[in-house]
Amino acid sequence: MNADTSRLVKGLGRAFGGALLFALPLFMTMEIWRLAAGMDRWRLLLLYLLTIVLAFTMERHLGLRQGEPDSPLASVVDTAIALTAGIAAAAVVLSIFAVLEPVAAWGEAVAVVALAALPATIGASFARSQLGLDSTGRASEGYRQELFLMTAGATVFAANVAPTEEVVLLAGAMEPGHALGLIALELVVMHAFVYAVEFKGGATSHDFARVLLPYTVVGYVIACAVSAYLLWSFGRFDGTALGPALIETLVLALPATIGAAAARLIV
Amino acid sequence: MSDNDHHSPSSSPGERAVGVLGALVVCAMLTVLVHQAVTWHGPPRLTTQITQVQRTDAGYAASVVVENTGGRTAEGVHVTGEITRENTVVDTASTTIGYVPPDSHREVALVFTTDPERPNVDLRVGIAGFTPM
Image (tube, rainbow over the protein chains, first blue to last red):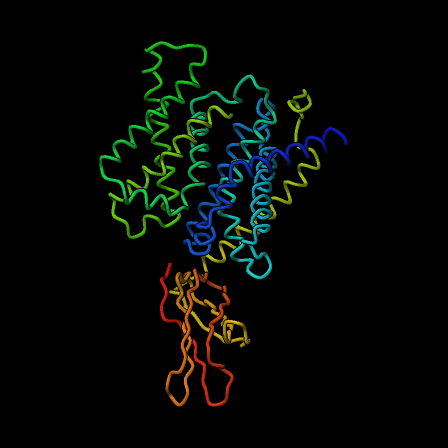
């Protein structure tokens, strides 16, 4: 096997594995089959287009060609490979579980795979981004890239939970006091992760405050925005008043916050 | 991790081939989703059709295909059936389907104690209710 073939096989294998690692919980969640069948098609289309944009941006800024001469074509190829791995993982797993009937109900199958492809493709991109790196650090250290990385992490974690009925049920059971406690928990978790990533070698109390606004608070807002967008896409806000919709967003923001914070540890 | 992994100058032919394949699949999926977005309009429109009746241990199972030709998914579709003799209902059965998406169908079985294929009896099936998604 020559070097190019070895690299291709290694890249595809890692992408497929990353897709399974990040999206298997969603593949095995029954709500996505129903949501994919029933959700507004323009919203599903927008979600799928954003999946492609997110994957492209990840490959562009965090991908395995980081540090090489700028090549948009190579980024497009890498994006297509990540999308292929995400779609293949969703199609294979859901077909084996007999969720998909690719021949008899191919229209439904396309919708389910498009929905499942969101975390699967981002997972594939995360895994591929590790291929071009050694263990000494992240490919990208700029603030914009950090925020983008948090967005991707929030998306992949929130996408696994957003379709579930539990988000709505938990929000329905919570009182305003619970919601305030949840916000406090999410901010503490976010700040703990940020602090751990930023100051592995030791920090002062001044550093603790310095990252609060640009990373913890901004990261938390990103996690909430991603959560709200996903819930809107799945129709969870339809016919729902602002108050319950806000609490649903806060509930989903917990996994989104952990995803946003942990993404900076992973990549 | 080898240096080769770090410094491949650009995509290899194999990577480009997989990339083209992936792009084609993505374009095909986008085409399907756009087509669905443009053509799916209006509420669910459900039709029922009895395809066969089989004798089983539980009774006479009438297979019913429920098709949705409308523009939205119907959730919790309640399918009912009744057997009448001389305008008198002699047997009923019902079941619920989780959901039926547009352009799709689902098959269910309604089980009766009376043979619906006996002479002088009529079997009628219909939809008692559903929730549009």
